[in-house]
Length: 63
Image (cartoon, rainbow, N blue to C red; front, side, top):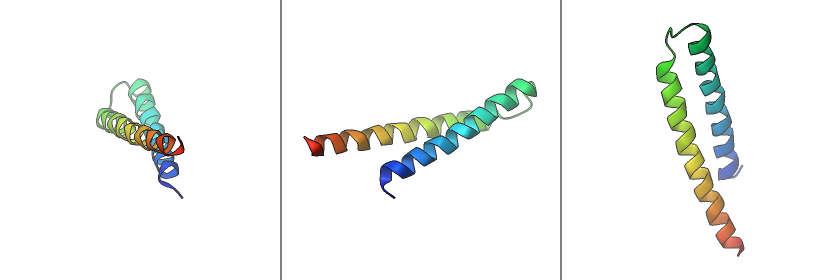
């Protein structure tokens, strides 16, 4: 697997944890989940930035 595939898989997994945390906060009225909410949002942001850099590098190689 190449690096972009691994980044996308990581992004999807962190998105699932993000949605789980949001649902837990909404349905259980704030009984935890805030730490995982913030952590998964940070991981998603980091992975997306790295993915976009890889994509830009790949496009520059093609041109």
